[in-house]
Image 1 (tube, helix red, strand yellow):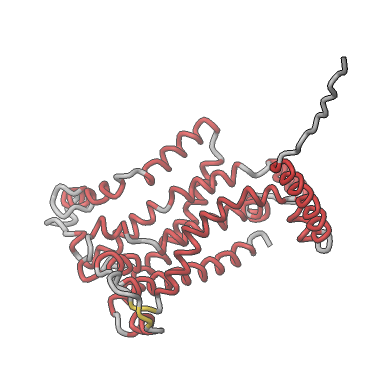
Image 2 (cartoon, rainbow, N blue to C red):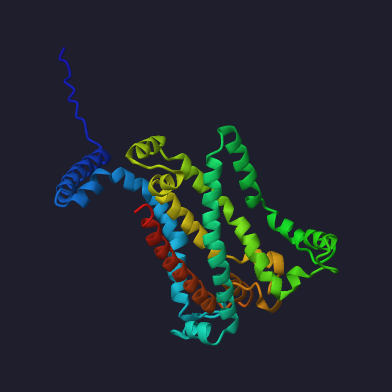
Length: 335
């Protein structure tokens, strides 16, 4: 009896062949990219850290979508007339010319914003650092409690309501009640309906609210300084706390100082919610009118998006210029 010889023929699936070709192609490309990256140090660095750059892709996509694209669109719309209902019409520099030459309310808004920024910006910045520096010198058990007490009110959601109650226009407002009790005034003052008082009150409230984030950043920066630097400084001839502050503390906090400066600039220029909550919109004789209020007026009420985009572009450029100036000043600290 003959044994039937069975010939086993194994066929390679087409998908396996495609995968093999894909692997060979990928190996060849990897070799080519590796050789290309060796030509310049920057390319080599990117190639060796390619996994890290790939992890940054989602962030870069979201950043481009929600930050870069809106900024570019705002800049482009600033040269058009656009009321949402009609197609944007090119008007060139007309929006910017009208903004600075034919819009007296914008000039008032610029003046108010600059006054608020020049007062609350430097004072809030220095006050945040001084308070953080003093609290950092306290014992650890006191430091945490005082940090919470100092920081919590400035981020409370109903903080502005408290100030509205303090400066209420009737005898039940705390300011009026105490001033009448002390005999300084005989009748209540309409604090938030009088153009003379609106801007100073806005400055006080904005200054108080600006301390929160900067204060925490300063505390974190102070805690991150290695104590060995102070010991080495004492050996090198540093004799008092002011020299420690200038030659050790501030130079080791430059990144935190720059971060706090950026936050302070943004907060000083973006004053709008405070004035609206305290003095209404628009405020009496535009006494508390800021650039943000002007932007909201044309963007959210009149829907003149081209003109509003021109206002936003001016704010954006002003923030960049101030940021560059502050960075130059901070880099000179400790030199």
